[in-house]
Image (cartoon, rainbow, N blue to C red):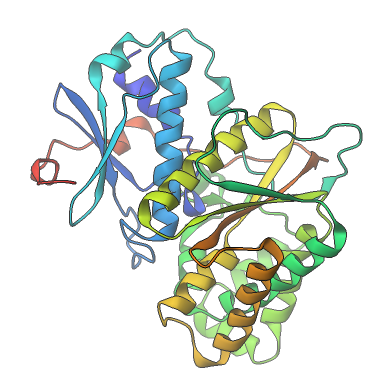
Length: 351
């Protein structure tokens, strides 16, 4: 397998709003991948932000899966950290020895489906076999899903009142075929919008307009629409782990492994991150005082429902079901967009 094919396959890894925040350096001995914020908007996460670590773990899982499918050992990718970033190292020899003709579709066909789901019918999703990097709780009881949905709604209401998150989302949306074809961000066609929804979303893109409409209660309608498919989901999967960076990273590995497995089994997956994101903002003192109590109450209800230990937190939720429609998939950047010449950051002392 050549390096371009390798990078093209691993670029299908999920990331926050399809930001694909990775940069690749090749010194001939190792392919090194680090965090890279591509947007010209402020960075809401950073190299060691929770969402970044989740996608970093997912990236390592993708790499290990690819090497295994290509006939190579899965233990050859190594993560190291510096003060500035994390770095994934993969020996170029392991990449070049991987079989380019192997079937990598289990990786490349992984996808998000934001549309409504139908019940499982006779099919029951199963988790990947083997040792897991985190705890996965499968919730199917409607009363428990209703509690989760109420918590999600509270966090979504806070999210739609947050300028940073609003501007991040709208900077990520791609409205036209040409924009979507660039391979970055979220193709608006992937969203489950009602008739006229695209026009409406255009209208609320400026934050000052959204801020004004929120005074009339728009955020409540937005949060309600966001949580309705969740509330009616056949099943919810909760990914739970400890709070240090390595456990968050390992949860990303577990998430990607599970996601690939579910899609292979024929199930659709829609990730929900608002509860975790707003919970982290609460801990970091980044919420407007008006939203502290609602988000705090939602986090407490989550802890009780999922029986979280004092050192555990919810890292991600999956809505899982059977697809009613074939989803549109956001595209990926061209392979050459990920490369850079080797830089000194890869020579720093790491741990």
